[in-house]
Length: 71
Image (tube, rainbow, N blue to C red; front, side):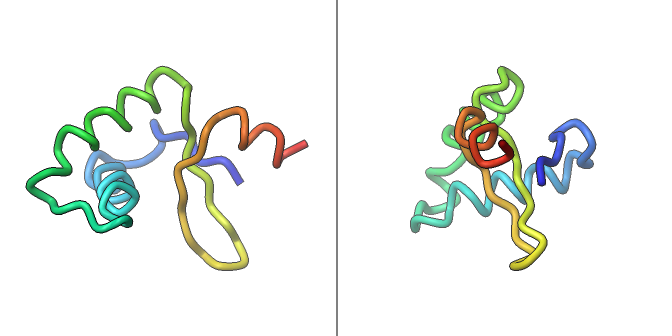
């Protein structure tokens, strides 16, 4: 399921992006630039937020990947 990032509150969006960026062990002090980059990619439509109903988790994936999975 695709979640339009515009539908999330600023706090929720930051939380989703922060969790995604720090998932691989990135320290929060190093994460700000990566978080800004991911937000830009969301705004440009390069990546999208997905929600998995089975696992009840969010992920950020490439827009093309999400379209392929939706088809």
